[in-house]
Amino acid sequence: MNSLATIGMTGGFALGRANNQLFTATQRLATGVRINRGADDPAGLISSERLSAALAALEAESRSFQRSRAVTNTADGALDGLTDQLNRADQLAIAAANTGGVSDAEREAMQMELD
Image (cartoon, rainbow, N blue to C red; front, side, top):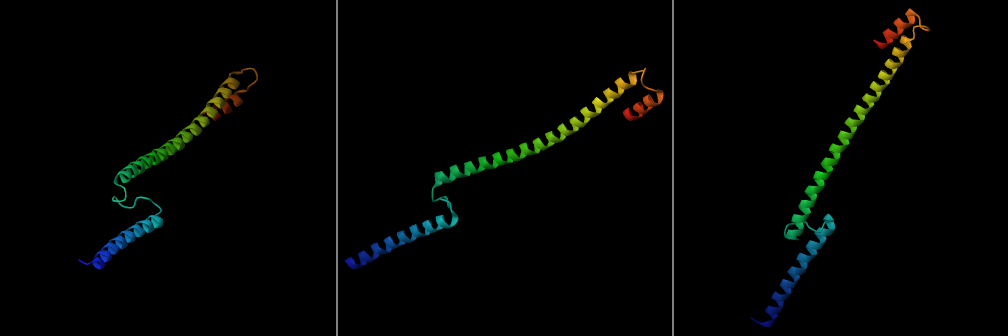
């Protein structure tokens, strides 16, 4: 082989490596991520996939907690309404027990409200 052919082959290899590096850099810029293929960083890809799976699990858990909080708030509202009703029933029972100041018609009205 002559030296001109050797220079041409060496230059061709260098050009090929430069094109590969340019493609990789362009791909990373276009996607915004460092790892686009397993060949870019196999260990990094595994770590990235594990972190993505953990993040997805945490997001699902967060949505579950939000639904649980909504159910709890609904139950709390229902308990508040029940407490109000029980307090009113207590007031009516105490008022109805007052035999001196309440007529029979008023007691019947209180009983109707309680019912």
